Length: 471
Image (cartoon, rainbow, N blue to C red; front, top):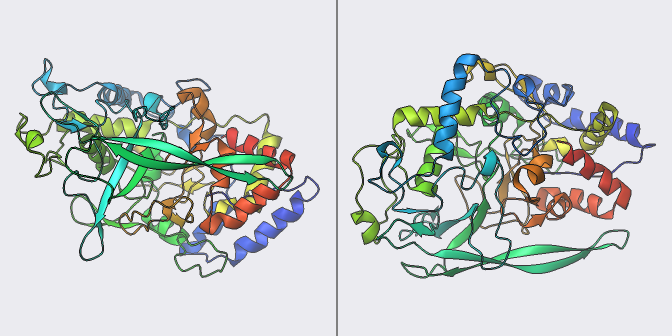
């Protein structure tokens, strides 16, 4: 979450001093973790030793720079699994069949093109090609649960002989506004309708459209110790700064308590669980983690479709897919020069952006792979939940996340999305057409920051956005 106020050059050092005083009032947590991380130097090597210096449309596709040669084979095979278009059972190549029976896309890369970010349809009524819609209904005891007819997401494709569940249509209402200097702007408020709902109306469901996020740096985020996240959390806002970062406390696939750190609402605890959940929900592929096909009782055609008896992604293939996801490198930042980068960073930190978008995190010694261990890196996230206000609320609880809470999105790589994916759509549902609109949608804990941005002079607004585009 951005907490943004622009400083004149003359006022920059005053702002930095104010930041130091404010940071000192925040609870230190375990062994002063927050202060230690805030004091760490930030460099353009956003992924620490894993960083790649690549500025091209393939910038998100490379293995971590410090990975040993012997890891390359597993990474490249994982890349093949990620990019393979799966076929329905039984296909010509039985290692890559098992698609569906219902699904959204036939490959991981179908949504995460070049390991990057999805977008909403360009025109109203166009199919959703790199986003999906989450579904929930309220149970009698007041909890949000998957729709018993459809599951927890709408699958708009199906194999031959099976009905697709339906499709979502996204349209927008203009929301006009004005910057403090009188310059007008227009935001887009998304609205969903549904067509071809095969198993009953979805009008009563709680729905949440989600674009596919970029998948760089996941191994580093997974390796941040739980103790760090516990120290950064301030659920009760004990320092009174209006920022109440919370952990999404979950139960993992083995039934153990877990801390969420992946997904738009930090609703998944680990990369294997995230990969297996996406394989099942998005492509219809079973794994050893989620071994049951996604066919609700009312979907007779889905339940009757032929399928192999074991996991449709074999354990060996799945392990390589997870290795691939863990080792996708973060590109180096691309500022005009280091002075510009550090000045932008000072403004970002001085005015409190780092309260949620923590510039620096560190991995522990027991990371899943040695090259991910003991890394100091710069994702610009705290991996915590924050209330972003009614404007961004989907009103869909997820784990312990409320309907208005979202995980702080990492900012690394954000400036490369237009180059990698050909668009600049941001936020969880892609409603924002660029960084300014994304900031202007912030509310809740970010309301004062949004207002600071809205009322800042045009050159100061442009200066911060230039810094963000360099990440």
